[in-house]
Image: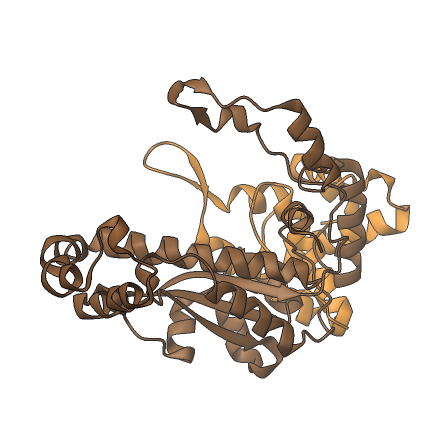
Length: 262
Length: 116
């Protein structure tokens, strides 16, 4: 699928084909995409745990439910737990990765980087002060993990899958999966083949970018060029908004199929 | 409670309006009302009491759902469904039919899905 079409086709899928297996190959592809996401300092912030629903016993699946994620756990064949691994908060790890980037030429003298700077000054001047603030440590890990999640989600769309981010009972997840204390739970991505129209009749409403983005100063909205907008429509990035009546009919049919509240 | 009494409750009118259930067949409507009435008898509250009893007022004076009471009602729905002898798909569908009444009265609650 063309890249802009992938961006335009992504939806939060809430009805999955519960018994259509998701190929491990596709999950691997999603994880490789996550692993290619932008990441400051080339640090491995993101961690993921892939769980196939049918590999969990019924008791565990029940215990993972929360009021906002109940039916979804029945319907999604795969759960991917994303974490921000805070071991990067150790300055030695940070320095090791920066050193590698300097050695490989990703960080360059043309931009002020050198072995000597990394060896002698960067830890004391930048990294240690930065990582001494728990809010910064949490912010860094979660935002970088979010970038990885985004890549995984878009790749799912490209692979013909559907996905949606959820919160599950992380107390249960901690007990069952025993992830380390220094991993911050971010989101659980539920994955499967959509049982709903994967385009759900149109995109969710989005406010115009001129109401969200600015040019040079915050008094000047970023003005869209109508010709660009039309081009993006043609490329599938901007699509018609969801038709509420058609969607209601689809939801009712799906609710009946899965015995869910109408 | 008989279906006529259930149907007259404002919370049930709200449910039918919000879920667009008026276009259902008479049999479907009767099934919903009978189920909800049976659950209300089981739980010892009218539909209006049931819906209203799941909210509380926050210190800031705003309405919020009581998580504890919601969990209790959720468990009572499962209990009622089992006591009524429903199994398999019927158990899931009929439990979720009662949850639908709560959903359309502002109580966020989800049921399990039937996978067949």
